[in-house]
Amino acid sequence: MAAPLIHQTDLFRPHNDPDDHFDLAVIYALALQGKIDLRGIVIDRPPPKFDGDPDMGAIAQLNHITGLTVPAVVGSAQPMKSPHDTQSSAPPSDKAAVRFILDVLRQSHQRVAITVVGSCRDVALAGKTDPALFARKCAGIYINAGTGSPDPKLASVLEYNVTLDPAAYRALFDLPCTIYWLPCFEDYEGEWRVKRYGTYWRFRQEEVLPALSPRMQNFFLYMFQRVRETDWLRYLYRQPDASLIKQYSQQERNMWSVVSFLHVAGLTVTTTGEVVPIKASGDSAVYAFQPVRISCNENAVTTWHPDSRSTNRYMFMVRDLEHYQSAMTRALRTLLTALP
Image 1 (spheres, rainbow, N blue to C red):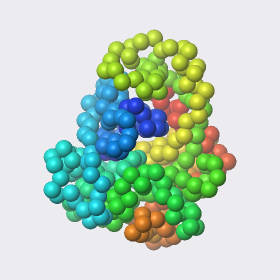
Image 2: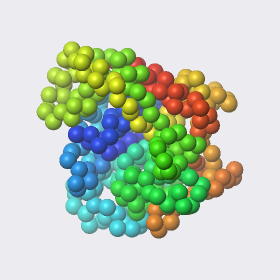
Image 3: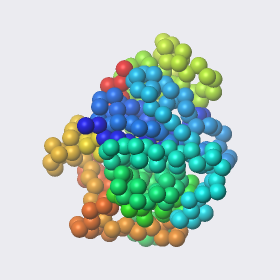
Image 4: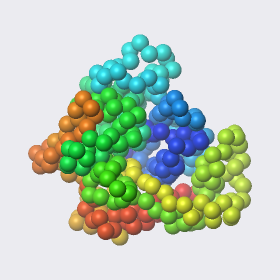
């Protein structure tokens, strides 16, 4: 049975980081395969100084390509004042995402997973508004944010997604449901690279982009070029521009969150890059989730300790540092080439 999912994202046009569009395509690929039941998408309100809007066009494109009819809603513009804030007096436009999340949970006969790859705001507001509902109906919140270093000094440097709404990030760790914490980095020391306690990896786009279907190539070209026109449907049916494919194939792409979507679907990635059921992976999985105790202080600094007795707090870790990046790249290609 497909796993119900709400996906929260900072998906903008023009894009802030193209990884959000790759993430969205992965989720649609899993939904098309019947692994995920994508109940809806919550898009962050763009930060005040950011020149972009929630990318409803990208969702329309992927709905069209896959034949799915996934709804989307825009989140609150107001940062949480504290981890206990519910924004009860906010205007209707700032409450839409919270209402949507709560409605999906209430109406679902199955427990619903939530993946967070941008600000934690709207999921935290929903959880604080009705924590009992989250205890009953939320299968788990996947927090793609933060730094995972066990060194308190290194962990004190806040990761980007945390800075979007620190109070909301803190609030998620207090909710009465299972939490899967996927730090984006282990730390910010030196250049970005694969480390034990961070999901970060990168690939060269020539390893994926030329292999995609024409419509999926155009989906990414439309995003890469920061197109602001409204011809999102006609653009999909153009002949892909070979010169643009060549140009963008030379770019490196930073990635973080794919692991969370696979885990919701009951899947993992082996050291050789195969996408397999978690139950069948044995010792071949290139990453794992370990049970932990987690705390997040008033400065939004997260600390953790292994705890084999924990049954509702888990943390991502790379098992095979040497093969993680190549394995994730192969898995990404496998997932995206399945889209028509």
